[in-house]
Amino acid sequence: MGSKNKLKRFKENESFGNVVQPTREDLLNENFPWKGNWKQGFFKNDQPLVLELGCGKGEYSVNLAQKYPGKNFLGVDIKGARFWRGAKTALAENLVNVGFLRTQIELITHCFAEGEVDEIWITFPDPQIKYKRTKHRLTNEEFLDKYRKVLKPEGIIHLKTDSEFMHGYTLGLLHGLGEKINYAHHDVYGSTGSPEEVTSIQTFYESQYLEKGKKITYVSFQLAFK
Image (cartoon, rainbow, N blue to C red; front, top):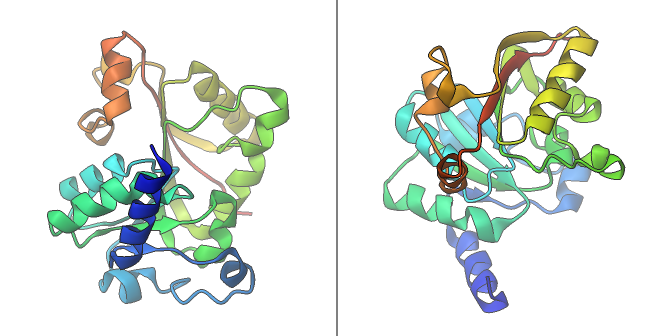
């Protein structure tokens, strides 16, 4: 994507009512008005709040919002030029139960109050295979502790990925920590018992992976509250 195109999208995002773009300073200084106020303030209802972390173009968030009008969905990503597409689609289709937050995922405890989030989706994250990159892996222990802080007790986390490595790493970590695994499969489209919300929605890249014969893995789990 050219720099002109990126700038145009950044500018357009600023005018979108479904996009929130706090500064890092505002978040770290706890000067963020939506923290603890996403449901009543931003979405203007009391429906469950579901995050998609690393939402990319926002396809999954938009599709979930279409499928489940009784829930609020918020795509989170630092790359605003990517989720511009999802935000624009949501506005065009008058989807009032989906929004987008531009921030780094490590700052989510500054964006959401304790127990404010009902569910988290992590869809096709970078597996960060090299050892030096483990601190960026979205299911490492440090990130799990952040999710634990913003999730309500019994809140569900979904991991959907084409990476067998990420799938195995996450399962191993969860088993080691004694966390509750609700469902796990290394090939959701090859399994008859896969949840519908996992198999009925596909991103553009996911459909490409499937065409190449790549298996899509999925884990649903819950974190024990300390």
